[in-house]
Length: 154
Image (cartoon, rainbow, N blue to C red; front, side, top):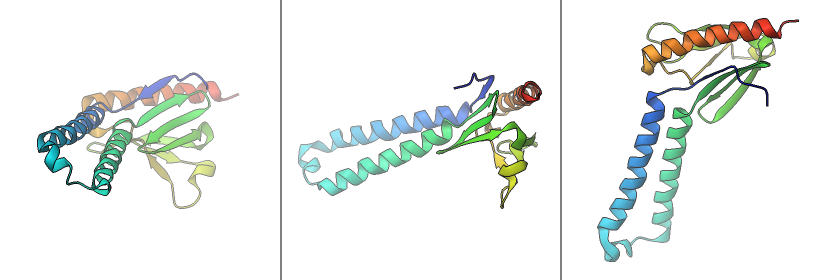
């Protein structure tokens, strides 16, 4: 793997994902204990498995969003939005915009990545809800992208 020159991740959504996941799991365990053995014995295996699957799905989605990341690497822009990971070579990375009040920055696609109905992609590794921290990450991202693009040109 190539060295990473910049990494951005959301603070607030990450803390929320971990906190809400802990509340869900601890709450489910506490509820199971509080119900008592007699009441627990009335649950079917299907009901217990349904609860466990629900908890796994909720924790997975919360953590996937909270652990979204943007990385600037020498060969291009790497980012994870929820459960999907994307790698864009520098030839496909256009301007990056983060307007006031926007939930996250957008990268304008060019080249092969812009074909079809996609001309922008969101960068969920920087969340507008983080306010000043998000703005600082966005500005650092722009500097890192400019430097990486400059180094990658022959």
